[in-house]
Image (cartoon, rainbow, N blue to C red; front, side, top):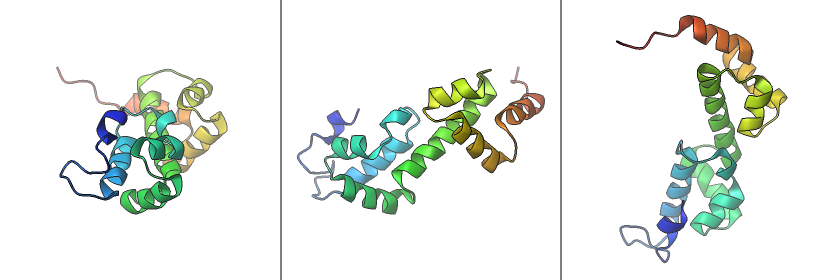
Length: 133
């Protein structure tokens, strides 16, 4: 995905030298909903934007306000809630699909919502609004 964007010889689209545009690109890709969760990791992103992992890690935190693993965990949680609302996947299959353990996923949902994944789904199903006519 990034290969076509980063082949610009170290210059940003406006022609300025530097790496800040590469960091902004990495942050944008990590936040983009179409990016696969498995691709939100330091080795992939640093290779894609041609920065060392150490440099990208430091600059990513400054630009995004969180680390790459924190952003990935946040995206995992958002996707988990979405799938709990829209599917009937059980927690074990949902965790596998998102690439984490059932215990980790259950703990994150409980910490953020105050209820289990099943309780969240049941609450959502009882209180969702019907689609407009």
